[in-house]
Picture 1 (cartoon, helix red, strand yellow):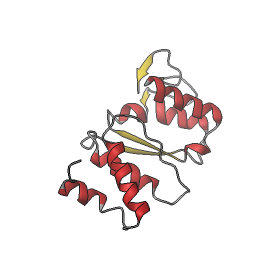
Picture 2: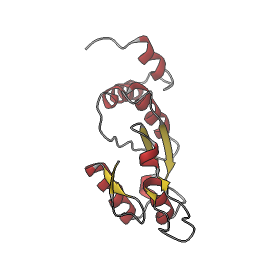
Picture 3: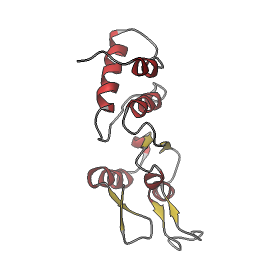
Length: 147
């Protein structure tokens, strides 16, 4: 394995510490950044999951594209669906125009979903469908879109 570049070291320096656990985490971040797959980052609230997601993004091929953050806590499933998947005009009261969701807005970049465990099981199932099939329906829509 080749030594990390100066840029990689600079990016990873945002993760402070030299313990074995931190060194292992840096390796996991580098490995995750090499592949174009969804990544599950686990940990208690406040341990730095957002930072890890940002580092993976900055080291990945997506680094020049958007990094969007969506908190899944303290938001209703219905509102979250509209935020993530978008909605069609007339899909619900107040939907006066078509709105794109975060999956589309990311435009091939990274969408970090924070506190997914706070979602209802139904909302988690819909997210799983997007991750597995890379497609979704806008709220009120009947056409599949690529996620």
